[in-house]
Length: 255
Image (cartoon, rainbow, N blue to C red):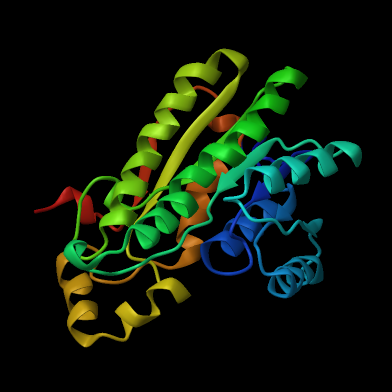
């Protein structure tokens, strides 16, 4: 492996990693040499994910906490400190969806999506960055955005607002933390075959629309995001900051 992409000796924390994209990111970073710490709220499901990674020969640990709870996040990082574990790479992947027309959307549901998809990236990112700055050797923070970081669709307004915020949060963090050797970037997945999108994949009209509107004429697979994640986690991206890389089969490139 090229040293530009070798993550040996680095520790990565991936939120929302009990399944789906988060678990794929954990697998990909582990294959590049990183020790991975997977996070989610579901203790049992998270333990199973960590065991799956270890069964493949990777150094993996589970760290359950609620990414929207500032005190719980701080306590989790304090626990890592006490164990002598320093986070070199953070992937803020935790996210939820709530489909509803705006005129019918309840404030509590708006806030729940914003808190999980956007505010959590600030909360967890802040704790990681404080320690990266104190150690003086930089680090990598990667937020997971979406096509809706750039374009809107009906019935997903809170998700769209949160993912648009993710793009700008990466830039705001880069503006403040680049001087400390911290690179903060984002990945914008296209339509990917994950459990979150099961209802969409099973909808014949939506499935046909995805395949017709995307130049690649298909859904993406979770593992197709790993290359971007490894690049943004590795030395290869040391002068890349405040960017969002769309992995969407060309969807945003066409009308």
